[in-house]
Image (cartoon, rainbow, N blue to C red; front, top):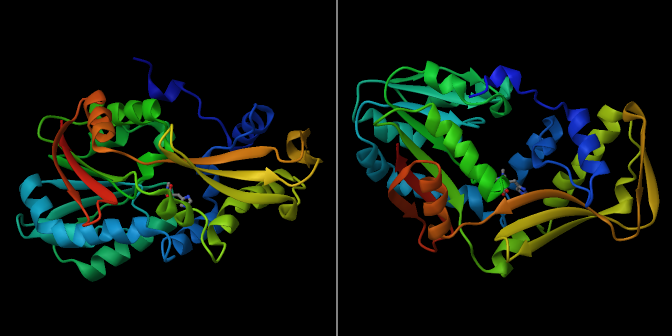
Length: 317
Ligand code: AVJ
């Protein structure tokens, strides 16, 4: 086992350089989330076409009691990528009915989001002790073993969907490695559904998702002294049925070269060339089962909305 401190984490500039000099061109989806991108994602979650957030929240609200019963009393809740904990309060409410206090550890890379999480939980639920953890998952999940007691790890919002199946299994395996007997995972996954529902969710009428996608160019202009012409790229969303994923791309509308002065790099684009910016995997139950068992978890129970658009899966170590 290699100590995680010895694995270097690539910088923003290194990730951009690797992505734009590769073929086909791509950028990792996590680069969306500067301050502007995070705000745009919040806007996406409110769009009529983007069913994911409200569907998952609906399941949590309708089934919090059942989920808490299946989890059992005496847990600390650790939420990976908690943000401002918008979806967590109903579940915390059901858990406090079964134990005196619930320690709640929201984990996020953003300290401002964690301040929001603390405030929201303090306002909405009694007998929850909020202990924010600032962590970047690129550094591993070592922080989990520092948290005492039996743990329920929440990984909601279909965040797992950004990872290809092999990477998702290896990440869940890393999480599993920091957990012990009796610990549990509640995983949110977006399920496979008709293309006519999926496409608008990633290409909304107001153009907010297009704006979110092209913000990745704006960020390189600002942080890397690049000269991307935002009007020379178009947002493309497509359903890749073979790979079971929604994809987002930025399509070059003409022949052009872009200068990234901080990287001392010039990148040429032919007309129609794409930068692949995101994969968002959609799951079937067999895929969920194989992902969880591949990582050493046992599926206990799944909950869905009425249309089976979104799933919440409780698994045990
Ligand atoms: C935050 C990764 C769950 O894949 O649906 C929203 C990001 N991309 N619209 C998703 C996203 C385009 C979102 N996740």
